[in-house]
Image 1 (cartoon, rainbow, N blue to C red):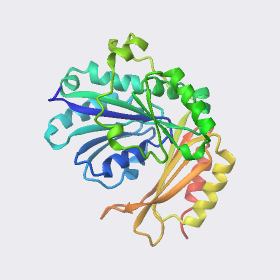
Image 2: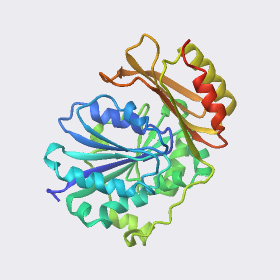
Image 3: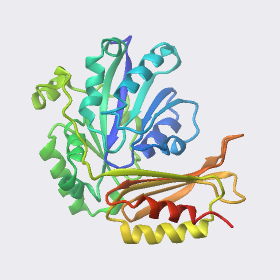
Length: 321
């Protein structure tokens, strides 16, 4: 065990706060170095740009869910990392919000090379306290993410009352009575409470999923959830963008599970990160553009009933004059 590298899997439904927690882990002074693997559901990656500039190695897997089409990529990246295992203390895998953690966890037991070199330290599930109950009603992934969790970070506590929080915790324990729940706002949990816990319990998983070690993967996604991504090379006018995105979220917010983008504003050397869950939006500057990089603005929508031409025209209409 002492020769194996610990792996923490960060999972949770779209917009629960996974990248915020990842940034907290990467920037706090704990003296450890992590390799990071990020998976996104869509052809354009944004999460990699949302990770705060750090000294870590970041690998990105796009255009597929880590539990489906890019699982082979995960094995290959892990194999590559094993050749440089003296360069870091652990590995963090951030899954797409639509991932079922079961086949992700299976990877660390079914592939012999991965099994010899790594150990699954914990599955950490981020939960949006405001929207979880609704998600449990329309998404089997949200339930699977809770069922396999060793640690649940009940995030966005600032958006719910104590009574609402208690009901959410009751629903979590009904699915997974073994989970350790930590309440948080903006994913502000101590790093040591989620990393280096040695919390993954294979026996508990086998109780729930006796076929876990068989290698079978019957996972399928909700077919009506789709991802659409757009980018523009010219700077984006902040006034135009705010007007357009505000109207879009107001009118289509129920269908937009997750919206995120990196924007290039005129005369600004910093990247602006925009994020939204349904109609709740937030944005801020996240650091300078990398030297010599093409300052393209890109935006990703994940949701239902999306109109690609309409969204493309709207985003392209935000270009500065």
